[in-house]
Image 1 (spheres, helix red, strand yellow):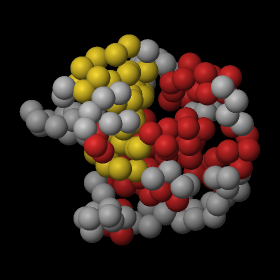
Image 2 (cartoon, rainbow, N blue to C red; image 1 turned 180 degrees about the vertical axis):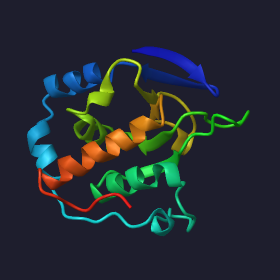
Image 3 (cartoon, one colour; image 1 turned 135 degrees about the vertical axis):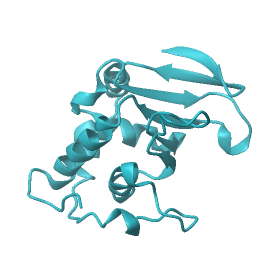
Length: 167
């Protein structure tokens, strides 16, 4: 872990998510029990039907992942499909959560092969004002990782059953 100042906020950055998962296990998080809570039947709606709390559609490139996470009880705060062609904004896909969702996110990521060093960056805001403090963000270094993680979660939630699917 390293810390950096990002937009005037001290931020802890974890490049090795596998190490972060192992730390949570050592601290007593029962990953198997927590994973069993994710078992569900679902069929993912079309991305146009996936609406955020403000009534706007979630960006197509990340909509399925946001929908699955929310269905699993992992509340997302904001998300972005990534915009490498823009000079302003995040060039990489990312999802932001409140700190209380962090453990659920790590449980969901356990066993996914995209947690290798540098593939995904998991960061915690350590300072800030009001709602900005204690935010957790996952940056996917390649957009293909969004689909990979989405497919992994479908398998995790279905417990190996043929279940739902992407539209």
